[in-house]
Image 1 (cartoon, rainbow, N blue to C red):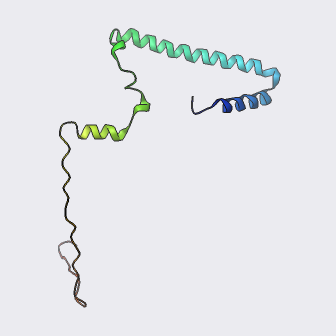
Image 2 (cartoon, helix red, strand yellow):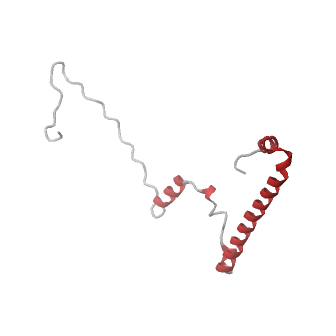
Image 3 (cartoon, rainbow, N blue to C red):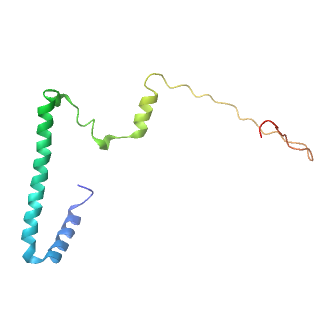
Length: 114
């Protein structure tokens, strides 16, 4: 849950006890419980509505495939580019050695390249 471990949650709880005090803590704990219950009811309501609108197709959907944590842009691009064709063989080109110029000669100049 958002990278929070039990120890971190315990520290947050202890800080909340000191900040809120024993008088206000039960009130805020009840509000937190109501908020959690409302969020869970909203999520279940959305799921039920989706099930009603999709009908029998709802059970056929692979929900794990649609999980955003599975999103890997490199894999998606690779699959899209290589979908229709086999990977092209890589061509290995020989390394060309640089020519050495005689001492005092001007370097080559291409007038059309500038």
